[in-house]
Image 1 (cartoon, rainbow, N blue to C red):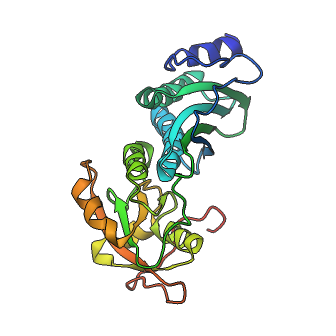
Image 2: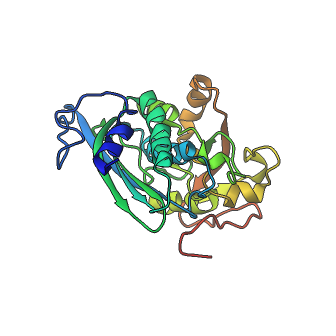
Image 3: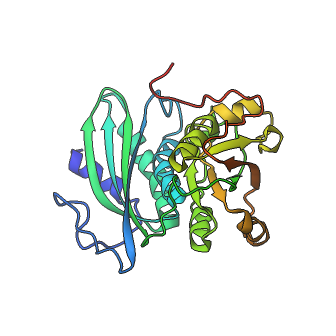
Length: 289
């Protein structure tokens, strides 16, 4: 079977959401961003032996590839609309596995009514999937890492630690929670925890020019996980966000989700030292071993 026929079969699994011009032409043509909205653009990739093992479920690999992008949309309080999928395919990889990976992506895409705008498939030494997502957010309402202030409280969704070996493949991106926080105007700064609290919290603090204080006993842990794992494991894909003191009561009272919500510390003036409650902050770094 030819490449074109294989791609046509894989695309059949995708939800049929019309675009002015979609897969099949040299470029996609997308509708204009609605008035009062700003475009949000994101790309991410999963790579064999970095983000997944070849022995992992193909559907789970596809799910993770798309879920990582959706997690970043969640962190901005933005709505995803269309995606591009690019695959690097090893010569000996059975093509049925690509179809299964598409099935994993398509299942998640149906939930959020995401259109597939197109992409690319190429031969590669290792298997990888790169996804670019396009979406929107109300003008001036994107939640940035840089919006927190001294005195804000720090919250996380869900539980932390022990993502590997399996939980990282099937995580649920906190899109509903991120969109709600954006619409309610309750998060002054936000990001998703992809590299671990020990790496991502310092990034948020640096962007907002504040110091941070963590309370180890307040960290929400997955069963059988340690505080050290919760800080440094990475790939939790929960939301870390700052809340102004006068909004904390509203947040707690109106939180409409079953997703756990935990206050884990706070932020202070940039001149103050970071308080890590005796913990070593490391997290995951692609360039450190």
